[in-house]
Length: 153
Image (cartoon, rainbow, N blue to C red; front, top):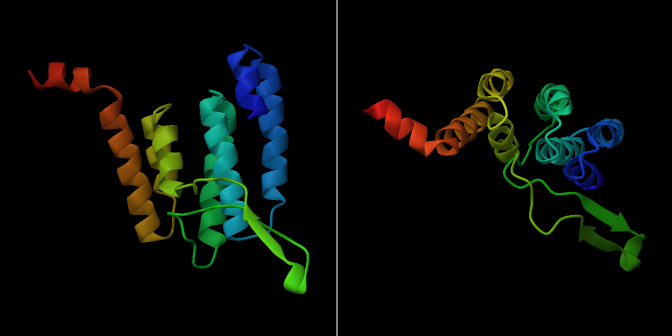
């Protein structure tokens, strides 16, 4: 969020620096769903901060992390924190709404559709590849409905 605020205030270098730092932390996350979730969240922040360089560094890492994950629930990714042990254990989630992995590709497609499609095609999992491609394609089609109407004439 700090990177998004910095970007809105015209401090792109600071936004990129914050996102690069967040990427480092995301890559240190536990392998599997936690790493995928962390990378997805940083990627979405990079898109919102309009940090194109960081987005294109993160998408391949996100695809690799997703391919390495066992039983990835790509439709409902969330960061769960567990404090304490035994009966005094407290569990909570970092976000109100879960992250949908194909939504990350839809957001990236609004920046550069062709590059996003290339990254989405890199998924080994057929179902995830199809979902990422469909969400990205839908985002591109929804981006400029007036342009499509003109082209149809």
